[in-house]
Image (cartoon, rainbow, N blue to C red):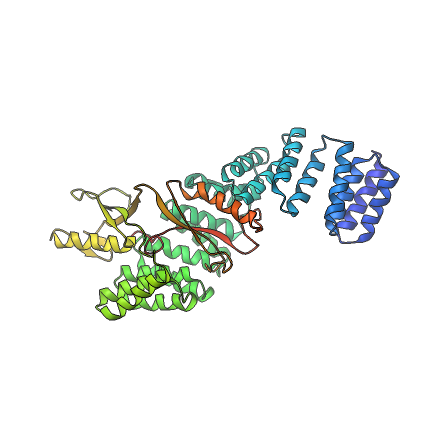
Length: 454
């Protein structure tokens, strides 16, 4: 291709990218003048796509590929055009063709990873993003997406390393630090999580998610008063998020401020007036306060809203551990079968220890240095709820949650749910957002959402 033709193609393409129809007109003229120029046809396809002519764009890119079958850039353009129409399988075929032409094209690998992510194929997506990072270690979006996928797949230490790399590449982006904190929190590395959330808040003081998660970290460290201040900051920024009020209620219950916990639940119900878990938690707390009639009324309401609110009997493992996770000598771990939420199971365990007359409890610590660790013990198939929720935790009213009973972990069955949504006509973007505003939520069907360690 001559330098003159290359210059004319580039100038016309830049005009079309700026939304100027004159750019496409020039490219149409260039393909007529140079019908055997694959770059001209490829640029024309890009311009037609930019100006909202997807079918014409596909015809043009196919013409470019007829002329040069091993043009990896043209295969990428075709894949992107197909993805714009949610034609995922043909797009993957185009990406594979492009990688046959150039197996070291990081853009093709990234698009392949993003496509698999949209399809819920998390292992395949991770493999593709791994390849991108191998080729371009500083590819920020691939590094960040690796963190998300590693978190989904339960590889939390690797996820933390990925988010640390993202924070290194873009240290002024608070989201990188918030995600790092969330992964460390989930992996129970509380000091590291706290440091990450503090950094996120230095960069973005009104990050309600960082404040709420910082509260969870502090609650797990038995720094309940500090945790409550974090929840209050989160509520001031995002007053309509039910998750914050749930976390606040749990923290207040740990301190035995049952009235405060009930106030938090009432705020929760103002946002989600039909939330069965909120009524159940309220009824349970009212029972502890001796308000038997009100308790029964709210428990009945919870069962009316969700007959499966109690869920299956879960098996919980309980133990006393110090700040380093070491077990308390002389206190054997126990297993408890219960349909109560973990914080209630933990409370009953502490009451049992006190009744033995050998232990003291103050500020949530047993014998001055131990806390109760609660963990689920899997016993056969687990029942899960799967649904679509917006950024405030509100379910998609047009897609009711469904139940799944399986031995598989969530990351292995949620992909099937995403494929079902796509078959029903929903769209999933490269960040896993459904229809542009919902995320897939997976939760165990038990009395309440999982709580922090008591």
